[in-house]
Length: 332
Image 1: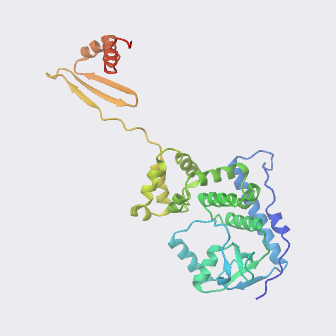
Image 2: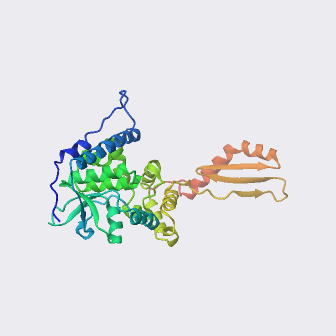
Image 3: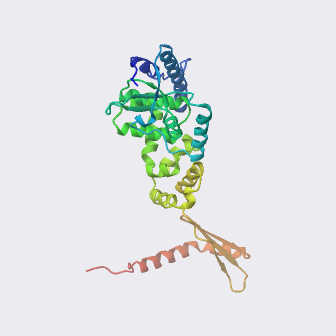
């Protein structure tokens, strides 16, 4: 099989032009809303560019899956086996309806590297079928932009998968402008994505999985909670338990989210005092730095205690001074 001639890369660049910062009426859009607007616009541009390329006669070829390697940057966590099984069954029944995008491998002649379509590649590999693919010459930056935009188009990546994808790209030295193009997002939202992926250790994220129901807000909260002392150790213990791995990905997120949530200091149980004859009782409760003394049965005793607070406090200070060794005298 021969590799078809690659079209000029300017089509891809046109499909991923710089984002607009304002809506059509001139209003500046807030982060997530603006990102959604940008994403929808870029999806349309990307699809039009692909349709134009196919209309120009860009060749779709069948390739032995054994000749295709994954992208150099992972963009998704492992999904539940049941979900992939359903996806694979659809391809088995209907065939591969949408081609994947690959490039000639930059280091291994005769091999290819995926820009997008990893799940389709995996399913077809397991089914023992050839892979329908568009072969296009792509730079590293063009590959990750195409990879990110395609996943945005299918609404396929969860929030944490996007965060990990963004962080991995930055760790590989890609400019944030390229990462913004890849994820169809703006500067502010990209900063949040990367911050989340850096705050929550990837070992824990891998244990949790993609958690599609978790959403942006809860991941941001979890990232903040992970900055607190002791949270990582608490979560580390939980994710090793068999009961944790038995949960589905969304339930695992809920478990970790609850463990990482801030807690009030545990207050000692209230204590009770009772006069020998039972004529007066009191309950002493503590919360933080406050102590509450509640006297019942004999309200006049409560009034008496209140009237003696000055003397009681003076006696307390004198006893404290003695206990601390400051009972008088001086060093000569």
